[in-house]
View 1 (cartoon, rainbow, N blue to C red):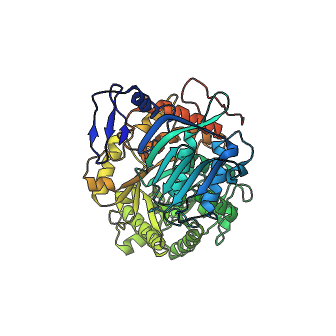
View 2 (view 1 turned 90 degrees about the vertical axis):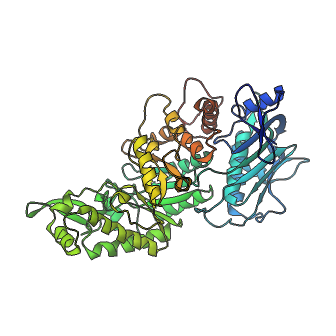
View 3 (view 1 turned 180 degrees about the vertical axis):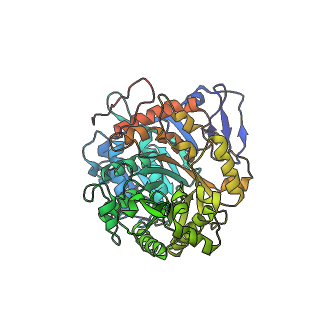
Amino acid sequence: MQLLPSSDSEVMYMDSSGRVTRPNVIFPLLIILQSCLYTVEGVWPLPQTFIPSSEQYRLSPQAFYFGYGRQSAVQPGCSVLDSAFKRYFSLVFPDFTSAYGALRFSVDKPFTVEVSVDHDDCEGYPNEDSSERYNLSVSTGHASLNAETVWGALRGLETFSQLVYQDDYGSYFVNKTVIEDFPRFQFRAILLDTSRHYLPVQTILKTLDAMAYSKFNVFHWHIVDDPSFPYQSRSFPDLSSKGAFHPMTHIYTQSDVRRVISHARLRGIRILPEFDSPGHTKSWGKGQPDLLTPCYKGSVPSGTFGPVNPALPSTYQFMKGLFKEVSSVFPDSYIHLGGDEVDFSCWRSNPDVRAFMQKMGFGGDFTKLEAYYMENIVNITSSLNKTSIVWQDVFDYHEKIPKDTVLQIWKGTPAKYKEELSRITKAGMRVLLAAPWYINHISYGQDWRNSYTVQPQNFSGTDEQKKLVIGGEVCMWGEYVDATNLTPRLWPRASAAAERLWSDEKQTSSVDKAFPRLQDFRCKLLRRGIQAEPLYVGHCKHEYQGI
């Protein structure tokens, strides 16, 4: 029987059959438990089932141990969990100087966190089918964490770390708790734009840490765009040497990329690279001759260039070589191909492009030309066993794209993007929602509330259509964002979307009930060195000292 959130005047239970009952007698203790669900012992994002208790256990860093369950499919030597145990020991006991105490078992009757995993996927990478389900039970002297995969175990360790708290004298405590948890949506992403402003690798790693604290699981790396091409390609080194802001200081080397991928893997985060074309490619043309379309003024070239030239065979030879490399560097099965905001004026001005269109039977319809280009690019990545994600623009002019392609909705007001959700899912296509979470746009005040109230499946459509919404994404575009202001602009505002994408819709319908938990979580972020901006007037017990 589990405790469920209800109104302030009554308590509901769910029995083992799933039936909800309302007892005639309200016990004061249960009312206290109910309030704990949203305040002192709150976890962010809120677990699917969370049964707290007032029964309290004291923890000591000298008598605390993370360990593997005897029946676990993974044992010591698992890279993901071994590193997580050290990392979370320091997060559970931030005042204790040595994380190596996490691996000692040298005192009588320590508090043990026993982790059991059903499947051995220690040395792999998280993917679209990876389970993040876990069960966590905290009782006298012991916590039991069971998960189907190591990725679920990571989510459970994060939850446990948030359950631990300190009193005014610095002593650590955890309360008796039972949690059953899993994400509502499988795809929960953060986009960073590293073209408009270069973000140092350390800033990206810090963002990955914060993502793990909020249980995001996909880092959408919008790595190149018009302003700069910082990705250092092995096959085409001129792309960065001529297209980056600086060929030595403002690039991501192959070593840098491996470091980001490794850091993300140990936190259960996938890396989704985006190489957006045919538009947003001005920086590409600096290092790759004949890739971009020469624009004309009348009958002569104007000296300017437009999108990628879709009329040349050399374009597709280059793209095949580039994406072959990208596919070998980034292990995830997904790749983002962009396809948005293509300006047709340069194509229209170019006589060779117009002649190609006539040859192909496109007439004067430039949407058909773009569809032709994107179809070729999708075919290239499909041949490399990659699933493509594209912006919604591609569907707008090419509704016959492969069914396994994922469309990302980024345009419009709530009414407009709900219409798009309905239209695209009706065609049987999977969808990611990003439109309401462009949080590079800021306002004074608690604009996180707008993000929190978004309901990705609230649109006109069948249940089957709504299942095609596989998740959402918080976008942090870089026109006015670099390493100086990224973190406070991103956190804790992105955490509002994180709970929407993880937690049960009905249990998290109240913004006012979420507010004290988010305030508490923001303080946890500060304690962990994340410069999360304040939500309102007040203070945290442990203010950030990093400035």
